[in-house]
Length: 595
Image (cartoon, rainbow, N blue to C red):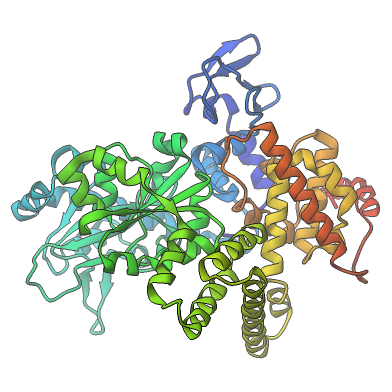
């Protein structure tokens, strides 16, 4: 996604009345010049959430959430900044322009047409389900018919060669958009055909509720074809960045209560969970869980729970997902369903109470990982202890959060009956090997595509991720910024974008006593805005409750890490004094950009 121009951002903000937009989400009551409601970002009985049309902003006197109309949509719908701007632009009929990397007018038109194709396809599948007794019986036998099918948009694609394709080509008259949607294909001989045939269909929506693809299950058990398929990758559909039922998480009551998303395996597992009241369930789209999906879930809550089938195949198959959540530093737990059942089977056979008992017995994800490692190795034999250590070190080397990695090292040492120093050394060796691999990969990339882009790639890796996490924590704890400014100079940070973002954070807090991501975005250059997008994905979910004691402990821990970062690097030719950068902000304003 490209960088939306500052002019477009301002136009979108002006075109969307803050009272009208927020009033679509919460019931507002006018008192004097302002409007009031109970805050949607924390639980309260007395209204402390105010919306000021004069100042074009909202503010909660309880949880301190505040910002512009764009910030509200970001927080409420758990969208990234560009996604929120695009949603509001569509609402107000604003045509966005992009500074760099954004879609061209032709690409935006193609996406819009592809969305139109998706909606037509969905209506077609719903219509065909009414004419398909076998599909209706399949859904009825599994309790997925009637109101359930209607709520989830379940449909049916008849076993016809090109029925849908012919309809679309007649109505849409845009072959490129039809192919981009993924519902139709062209074979080697040039014949058009329907991608989904003889299948029950499940619409897949993005975080804004738009249909971007379909999952489909083969109805005929004797047919020689893949049982489950998803839409092909395309302009709308990227399965590594989507989750089934993602669009329902923002309104999830269970997520607000528990702060955790449930990660299941299949569509029907998720549907059964939601229908039983577990409306915080999602599922990957036919593939293993990805790091992008874990980061996506962190917008919505502080933790994730992997719900695993109890048989050996289910647990073994889920181990890659387990490694992914641990590497991402997520607050992760594991809930195992006994008896070899999956969530769908358990909920249908024994109901919500049985599933609630499964969740009450969830375990820490790293403890579960240690148990899996112990089950594979005979730890009475030194050679196998070495194997177990190498496996765990390879995992821990990828854990981004240094504090969490340190705790995992301690647990691993206890489990393997080794000294912490031995585990730490193995992790450092694994990290060194990862760096060597990165360097070799970057070298190959530089040889094949020399120039500025290769140089930018070299600034990535663990150091960059670590520094992004520090800035994310500063955004979560903005009261720490004055002390941070005294400890850490911008020149210490890994790249220009991070340095620009850090200075903008300091400047913003100096001037306003707070940090509002939406307002911050409009005052950053290209590299700073790219880093802001990456950093925002690492911040805590809005409304995350923390006591004063916890906040103070987190603040002290953050300041200690900043001290270590500041002291761990010598003088650099590119290092610029903080005072000089802060003084330059006046000149930046004159040119329309902060330094």
